[in-house]
Image (cartoon, rainbow, N blue to C red; front, side, top):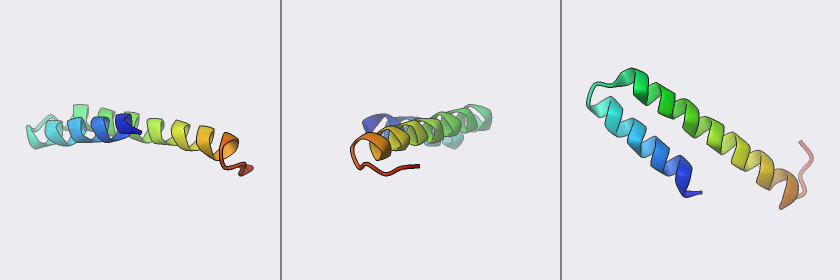
Length: 50
């Protein structure tokens, strides 16, 4: 669960230094990582049918 926070932080730093496109790409990677993580854990560990 560390990876989404790391990518979000790096994206925030890139946006701070005026690299908006790279920040948006890292935002997409963060959202994708969270979706994959949630789908895997919600299906296997919590037994929630999505």
